Structures are given as structure tokens and as C-alpha cells.
Length: 85
Image 1 (cartoon, helix red, strand yellow):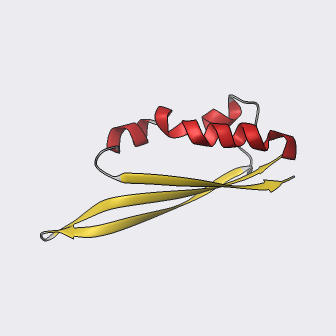
Image 2 (tube, helix red, strand yellow; image 1 turned 90 degrees about the vertical axis):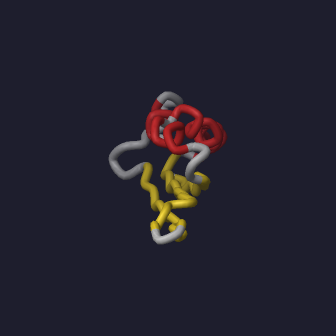
């Protein structure tokens, strides 16, 4: 997500972007398996950049190595929460 934002000249470092991830685990027989992951992104930005940040959010998973690796095995959802500077 950070790379997608910075490609649009939206700062992602220095505390601008943070995230919280939650995983849901289920038993498959006697083995615990991660079934779902949800990531909440929190972004501080200039209000003029909100639509560009939303577009980056819509597209970032298509270019994320981790998401591409586990897609089809683990359901991944994300949300973006913005805060004006």
C-alpha cells in the first residue's frame, strides 16, 4: 500500500500510514489454519489527495507480493480510513 501511495506522491512513511491486521483462524481437523485476514489502513493526508489514496487502495492488492501469493488460500479484505492533515 505504501508504494502505491508514494507512486501518487502521497507520503506513506514517517507515521502517515499505519495498519492493523486481524486474522481469523479455524480448525481443519486438528490443525489451526488462517482462513481470513483483514487489514485496516489508517492514512493521514492532505484532503485534496483522498480520491488518489482511495484509488491506490482499490488497486494495491493486485500488485502486493504477499496478497498474490496467498490469494485463493486465504481471504484478504482491507479498509482505508483517512484523516485530514
